[in-house]
Image (cartoon, rainbow, N blue to C red; front, top):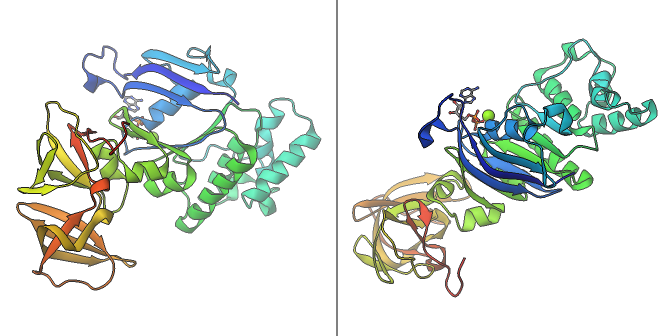
Length: 360
Ligand code: ADP
Ligand code: MG
């Protein structure tokens, strides 16, 4: 295992990149701590696979360095990096048995057959492939093939990192949930550094201790699932995580006074001064009805099972609230409050309000 450092990384697929737009990765500086369970979360095309391929050595970055425990491996080929990578679609040997597929990475390193057997059996058990060990991989269903692929990634104990690139894409929904919790369990058992790439917030939040959120070739926030939910550092994170996402509203800031639709609202703490486009951010979970300084008209109500999502019109803006209990009728005008310690101000997308009593 190793600590992996990405230093001053940029990557472009173009021969002569000029502007930031030409870069798939714009600027990445990041440490992956030894033994961590990480998720790399972001929309399709934001650069997740590019980043993984740079860590594994399938790609050489246009600029910057990859370090394993401080050692520069930027120009080391993949097979010298001691890394396991599981791809989106199964990469297996169809003509071999399941057992031989799982044993391959171990035999390749000259491991004795007794240890191979013990490792293969235990991984197969975990992935519920135990009954299929003697079957040829060719005859198996796509999800079983992907399980083999994952098993091949998990079977070695001596890797620096195990990386999963959207591994559950081809897996049946009910099995997805199961494999995800298995991976988490496995991480707790083997304590290998794992990087789990996904565009699905549920997958990221259930698997990882630390979630790295990417957008358009940049890291916008790194945090625990709770931190990302409670205090999004960027409007993108507020939107992308949570269901429905954070309300992003116009606001007017004069000194320490923040107004929304002409009404003064309390926020978490002082706002750092500066120029730029200011927005108020508050999650629907922290918008409450029945009391407060704002007046909102109910324009839509959706029953989503555990609670209701209520759309309100406040002045020129639309605000979402999550509410339990009785559903107000459409057209009703209600008092609305934003929970002040959960209400933030963003400038040009980045958080600029500070928590009361402490700098962040
Ligand atoms: P993700 O895995 O987050 O979906 P990728 O890393 O695959 O994103 O892609 C990031 C960006 O780089 C996208 O704009 C994509 O079109 C581009 N890209 C990816 N692979 C290549 C390639 N081999 N050649 C040119 N452009 C690529
Ligand atoms: Mg990808």
